[in-house]
Length: 57
Image 1 (cartoon, one colour):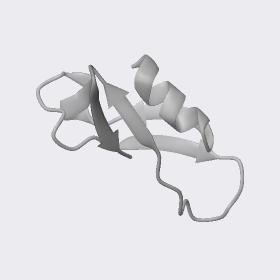
Image 2 (tube, one colour):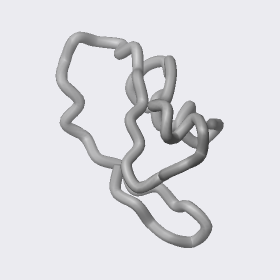
Image 3 (cartoon, rainbow, N blue to C red):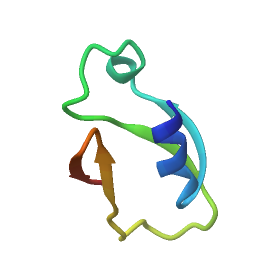
């Protein structure tokens, strides 16, 4: 969960993750809920390193 909290912290406050991610049944697609600092749409992408593999978020 710490990784998703860090991702959410880029743009606001982390609230929750989807059920599959919470149960750790699948990480193919992850949905996180974030309370944004502003009302603008997130247009930014970041690279996330997960065990030496880079993923675009």
